[in-house]
Length: 286
Ligand SMILES: Cc1cc2nc3c(=O)[nH]c(=O)nc-3n(C[C@H](O)[C@H](O)[C@H](O)COP(=O)(O)OP(=O)(O)OC[C@H]3O[C@@H](n4cnc5c(N)ncnc54)[C@H](O)[C@@H]3O)c2cc1C
Image 1 (cartoon, rainbow, N blue to C red):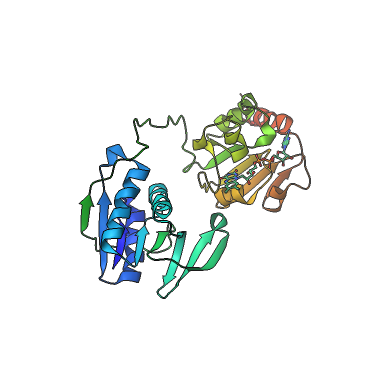
Image 2: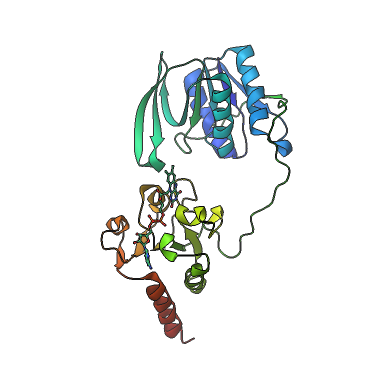
């Protein structure tokens, strides 16, 4: 029997997990949802799932590739001292299971063997089509957790959303400070663009994580991505490789972002970006 953690924060990813799990389990698939969504506790949810696993002895436990699916299964792996494979795109039954999984923000496919029973797997987003048939789900209560969600605060998104923007103006460590983003915001404003940034910037606390583009941030696919003071690390490029055109502004001729750029300006963003803004204003007669 295969156990599916019916985590439904993203219905599409949940239904993809159903397809993936059916491929492994056939009809011997059992789905369980855990606890009440309003009082989510990662370790408490995982403790309930761990107990269900110990009672039912499934051959595999599968979760959708959502943040929560990965988080809960990672807790289960720690609680039961089992290995876990995240981001799987395919699985072949056997002992050990043979897996293909996505690594490095989608730039690498890894062939792996997973030892340990039950096998703990999460499904990479969009690896398989969503299941159309639906599945009956059993509900069980969450166990008491040490960490609990006490409040939910919606992100305040002023202007265009990063994921849907047609133009993104993004700043990296080269911007130099939180205040330095004024020139990035000004250009974004003129282009009706969203502001993005690299992880160096969110780690420095200059911008919120919601602005981060990359492997562990938002994936964007605008018509134009303007990268200012960003070196072009693989993990950043994983988030912007869907852009149709990339303009990179950087004084370092050796910066790796230039290898992916359609347009290049070798220079200081604090001079180049205001000059672009001034030119746009001039053209518009403002
Ligand atoms: C597991 C993991 C996940 C990660 N996920 C992400 C992610 O989602 N997103 C992400 O961005 N990173 C991510 N990273 C971090 C990533 O590896 C890089 O460290 C990060 O992208 C670097 O950010 P940066 O380009 O702003 O900084 P740097 O690499 O320090 O580059 C700064 C650039 O600014 C240029 N510069 C300096 N001064 C100026 C100036 N005046 N004008 C113009 N340019 C200037 C420099 O020449 C340099 O090229 C991840 C790393 C790991 C290990």
